[in-house]
Amino acid sequence: MTTKKFASQADLEEKKISWDKLSENAYAYTAEGDPNTGVIIGDDGVMIIDATATPVAAQGVIAKVREITDKPIKYVVLTHYHAVRVLGASGYKGEGLEQIIASRDTWDLIVERGQQDMDSEIGRFPRLFQAVESVPGLTWPTITFEGEMTLWMGKLEVKIKQIGRGHTKGDTIVYLPSQNICFSGDLVEADAACYTGDAYLADWPQTLDNLAAMQFDKLVPGRGPALIGREAVDSGLAYTRDFVSTLYRSAQEAVGLGMDLKATMAHTRKNMDPKFGQVFIYEHCLPFDVTRAHDEASGIRDPRIWTAERDRQMWHSLQE
Image 1: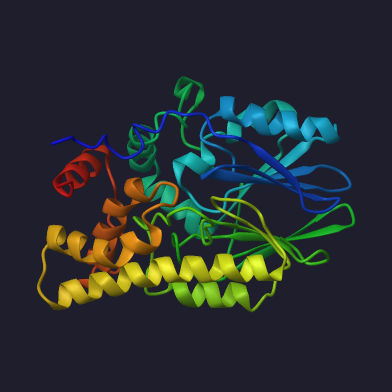
Image 2: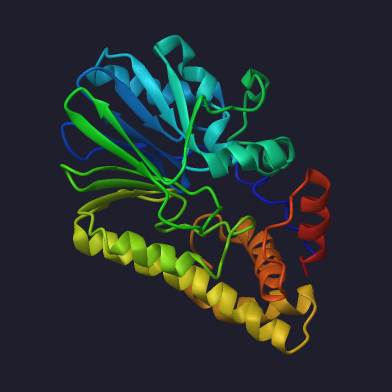
């Protein structure tokens, strides 16, 4: 029997970077299922949405920004607390960084479980955490908000808002009202699995409905290509809704039948593999996803904290 390598430890191939211009002010930095970064260029500075895994990785984003502007990179917005999204923030300190912005719920999650999450994610994603020694420690927001906030970058209005729980309880979207462009973080995925290890699966579809009601023309998901046009945006929302709903429904069925976690995994695979087995990071995510879905379906309302040790024990126990 071949033992599957833990999480993404076998994923060592460099990904092709795409740099998409969405408007005069908005750009998407994407890479074949790796975590995406959004860029907003205002009158007086630049905003980065999600900060890559390491300061070294952030240099790739900075290089693209510097091809088009020499304005200071004043702001980094964290759409949620996961290490792969936030630990690169210090890479912008030499570029004019003034503020790191996150929801209060995200701040609370960093306090509660940020260090454990950092340790576990570094073990899961060796390629993304190359040069991990460049990470100075946890990334702490310097501004937090509750509900929503508005930031003016000169004459450009930027909204930063929570519209409901999904991928985490701190999920935040960033959007340009004047241009109908949204950066969703991992609330939405395209051509990639949804990681739901820290999710609120019962809430997530309603949060997606809230997002759909905003009728964005362009949306940059947490992973996968930028979604250009209302049809592509709707398709990305529908894909994500299908993924999380199929997962949670499968777990509810399994728990209702008294299945243990391993049996729940097998039952869920029957429903998930045909539809999603080919997408980016599916095999990485599924053990974490099924574990959280089984917990939530069993009445465990808030996600349990992942540690490096719990990661490995769970992951290996669910491999056949």
